[in-house]
Amino acid sequence: MGNNPDRGRTVTTVLGRRLGGELLRMREACSLRQVHAAEALTASITKVAKIERGQVPLRDPDVRALCHLYGESDELVIGRLLAIAKADRDRRKVQGWWNQYPQLKAQMEYVVLEDIATELRTWQLAFVPGLLQTSDYARALAVGNGTWDDPGEIESFVEARMARQARLTGERPLQLWAMLHEGVLRQLVGGRDVMRSQLDHLLGAAQLPNVRVQVVPFFAGAHPGMTSAFTVISFAEPGALDLVQADTVSTKVWLESETDATRHNAIFDRLTRLGLARHESLSLIDSIRKEV
Image (cartoon, one colour):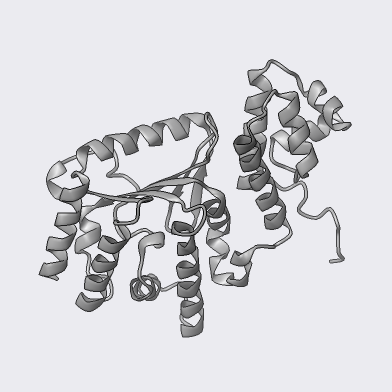
């Protein structure tokens, strides 16, 4: 198969759909039609339709032109859309730090979005979220999962997972709200020593100003989060379309509609009300650590 410069350019990506969906929302909010966007871009209506469906990458000048047309002047909003556009272009061209780790292939879209998000709200039933894992805990999960037999591949996976944690510190730290079922804390992943260190690490991470850890105890009873774990990925601008990601045995499922985002945010809010308060959650983690 020869090289095709247009190969992949009309393929939708989660990032492309995220950007296109937000531009569509902005256009409809000011009662403009695709023909007006096409005139602003000196492009065809067909291209505008592809942009709004996430089928083509978008240049920075085009993002700014559409924001101007739609009356958006907030540089924080425009900057976030530019970041998404750049990440989408890099993703299509196979660029970005994450591409040095082939073990991340199944998680690529999620990792790219995590890298530019402002907030994650994650609900976990079975394991500590990747952003809060120790290397030994991540390694034990990889071994237990059975995806890789080669120790070198497992180590590369662990290294990539640790690299992701840079998002919790630095100039623009990610806001992370982790809701954990009590069973997450009691599952002896990797044995007692590994689990004790993991719980220590969790207590330490919870002291960061941008990290909140909350536990839903066994005695909370039946609740709407019992069927599956999920993560809501949010961006800075008001009214932006959140994305929801849920895991299955073989892949990650993306829920991209406003209805899905609203429903999962409501479930998360209910879980926070069922969960222990912050200091009670940390006390329970510490108590289990001592038991281990």
